[in-house]
Image 1 (tube, rainbow, N blue to C red):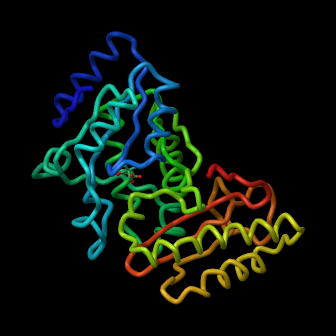
Image 2: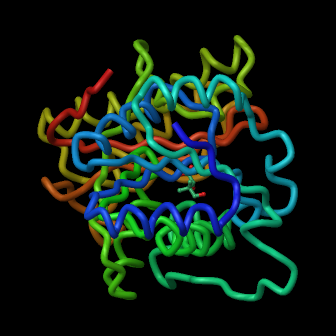
Length: 286
Ligand code: PAF
């Protein structure tokens, strides 16, 4: 596995792959790999001849007071895991390499970036779409694989590639859970033992919503109330949002059907966690 740190090296590698007619898949990450990341890499290698994983904690997608400086890192472990997963290139630039002096451009998908997580993190998706656009230009992948835990991010990126005619196939990979149901996230590392237990309220809320929907409840407002009640039982859990939305447009839906998902964001102490799932059929990849 090659470890590349400069944009020039990355572009040279991509040009060589194009000349050799190799199909390339990109997995953008911020590192601190868990089983969810590894499954993205595995899916990428099923699709393409060569897999590039980017490992870049992107300052542009963190707001003031967010966890940019404390974001968990384990570089040597990540390198070993990426190598083990058969990755061809680990691209890990420094911030100054991606945003050199004079950098002035941002790529913003309006509309869906402002819903859900965008309400409390108004500049987050602009930072994501800017860095992902740069990565697409540097790597020129045929495929790019993103996890469905960040459901809104995936929808924003799908919109980005359609709107800007970017020639890459976006592949969503199902959310991966711990054995007890907690959605895998690098940020789970922030949770202490008690918070880790309380964090299960996202999964329990989703399960309660599913049970009621499958038993025939179709009113979103009722289901949202049930989820809020489950979460509110935990003192240190503060709900940011619980919404039932169309899975393509992310518009709120008053009535539950096959096309909706439940999406939620909850703060457990100082850790912000998100989760989502379909209501009328389980996606229990636990
Ligand atoms: O999902 C993430 O880890 C990040 O938002 C991404 C897509 C790597 C962009 O920095």
